[in-house]
Length: 235
Image 1 (cartoon, helix red, strand yellow):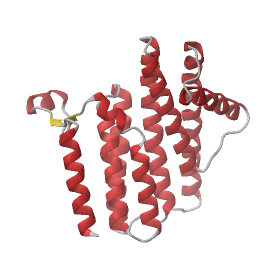
Image 2 (cartoon, one colour; image 1 turned 30 degrees about the vertical axis):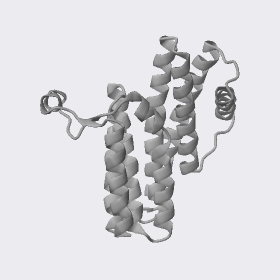
Image 3 (cartoon, one colour; image 1 turned 30 degrees about the horizontal axis):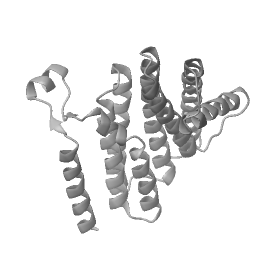
Image 4 (cartoon, one colour; image 1 turned 135 degrees about the vertical axis):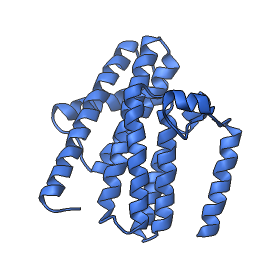
């Protein structure tokens, strides 16, 4: 197990050097009042879209099998990727991503220390991270549409939609009524993007609205879940 984690760390370090990761100068860190930052090329970050959830799913599997050390390692890897994505987010989105990454790091520590009561704790933390990523990608899509950047808009709309879908998987909640209709419209747009079928800027702008509705809906569902757990004494 230790050998596997060692080689994983070596591979990750090699990857970081290949994609051009470089420490931000101390003066820049002081100016921004943030630490442990790195700069990564946009294309490298784009290639990592969706990777946090790969780590989240592996973490859930390791936790279910009783392997807390590897589960924690996967959670930390996901947290690192979320934190890297925060580097190109707006102030508001970046703050939410940083908070999600910090929560994931804390969760990893609790997993190792045996302070996690059930897999549900992991699922809700992963859902929160996915919603933060979805909001971030939605903002990027909105910006790309304003700049008439068709390729960028397609990328961010797909990334946001996928993140919303993953959050829904983790929460176990599917929308109904008007929310379900917006959900279907968003998936229809995603299908067009995936198949390179013609889609209009007007459709894409509506897609941004659909995403906002889904993010708000799932965020509310998570609050309800937290309140229900507290009421029933679930830790």
